[in-house]
Image (cartoon, rainbow, N blue to C red; front, side):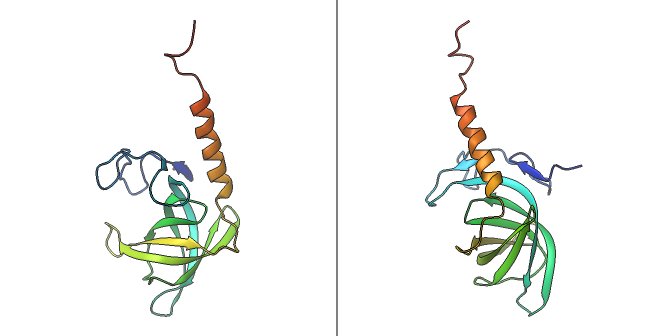
Length: 151
């Protein structure tokens, strides 16, 4: 059984995270790029609902790959979405509204990826997960390494 809140490592689609981005450069779980806040590479399951580009309502389970307080990269969507669409996301009993920023096709046939940005008035559903991951990273940084320990 797959862990529902897997951070880093192999994804449910069989791909792996080798610590390198698409451009071949190394990246850590907390990525440092031009964004205002850190993103964490994740593989979490969540529910998404809304109205697709044909006007049809949808509700489905998808995966979130990169997450931050303000957004996420969703993968495995069956519904066609457009930039600007508003969707709802449910994670760990918490929901929020998100605006679709961009849409692309994933490697799977008929599956869609979408980058989404949270409405400012809604609380981030995975805020506790991000806080725990950042606390764990800070604790790991403060632990002495084998080379610096005295016997």
